[in-house]
Image 1: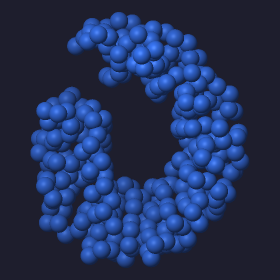
Image 2: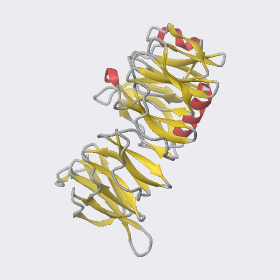
Image 3: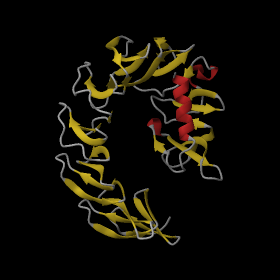
Image 4: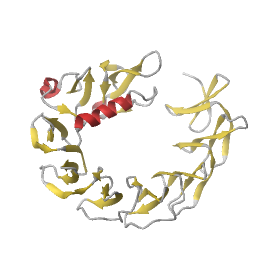
Length: 336
């Protein structure tokens, strides 16, 4: 099962556009990639914080460093490396079929169709007795046997029994699980904290989680109470006291009480980068033009650009093939 999931993830990653992956990691190394001539992922390597190549672009796939190791692939060979680009604890011997990166000092592995966990020395510390095994989070990991999911602790003991159709990672003390075809939430003691009536659910963020009911979205709190009627076509996580939603085909931001911080009147809306967000509106000929708005939805930059991208602390605004730059206070800055 781990190999099947890994294959799906690898296939998905190779179809992402350029510029979507680079991210910081522990140990001071940053996952990076170079592209082929069509702009898709080609090879992966690692940089230091100054942008110098520390591990060459030799890998067909790589994940960020975690607990001192990074999961990499060369051809069909999947293994871990350390920060010096050395195969870790003999993992290049393909003793296991690796799937997860290390989380909380443990990594799920598969051998002969059964899953267990190794520690950061490569020792098998939780035996391969599970049909499926997933990342540890907040001291617990979802595992499955005979088609049912439960949770184990770091000693390998089942602490939440096999009673779920699906089981997610714990975040902020809660996990999304599925039972009898519907989703709900449990806490780390396995107690059901919301009704199992939802067609979909996200993790809690700032005390609220988006849930789908009768085809539309709303938010529930940790006691299982809905904040308002399910009226949204999309609902995203809360961050900084607001959440991106889609209502009647338009995007806006709501507060936890359901009032709008930014009215839903945009065809595209990005996260906020500091005090400003990128917004888009369709013009008469069906072309999407972009501008910038403040935290109240007021236009601070005209909707006249072909694209606006935020990167490295500045906005890049492109119009008719010409690009200008603004810093995050909207002051003009020179191109580097």
